[in-house]
Length: 265
Image (tube, rainbow, N blue to C red; front, side):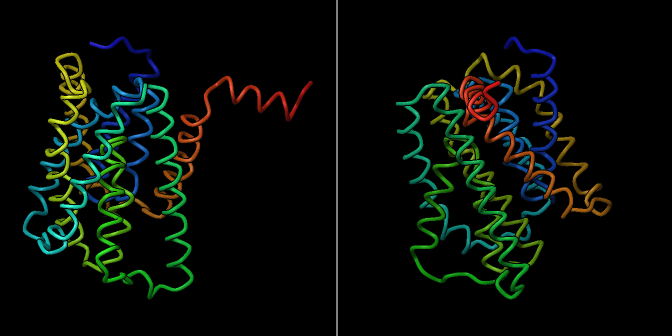
């Protein structure tokens, strides 16, 4: 079992619960959970600890929404996502914990800005919520980016939210297609993360401890959703993700230098 501080345990439990919550209705907060885990665990360990927890939550989501999957959308995207996973796997061979933490920070920060841009665009012109470029390059680029982000940081959630919203799928079809997609992709990633040593006998006890929190989050998500102001919740998640992402990008020494430069005395 890994040695964690009280704060690390709190972050781990909160991250596991948020993973489950993001799978069953409150889309957009999954990247916050990823960043929380990156703060609690060393860079390369974080994605390996998160993946089995994600799969447990995926099982709940699939059991809830599998009847609503739109298979053509899934089949259109998955081959390119698999390519992105392989690219991410090769990239992970040449980076250390610090590099991975920064990559997770950059991905989280960039995808959060993308989410803000999408919200502003739709607020300006609601008809664009269902707009989608019907070109091969769109599925290709989004699929590869999603595969790379999920392999490096389990960070494909915001990309898939953007993609599936762009397709204009009804709510239940959105949830069904998303559930099957993530379950398939996450299972596909397992042998790659085992080969990288991210999933091992040392990480599985932590997964066994945290998985029930993810399952609780997934089950309670459907019960809590009608009582939660999703817009407010997502806005808070966006702010927290930006702050946490910047924390991962800029190490404490660099932050201290910046503060000294701004306030030399």
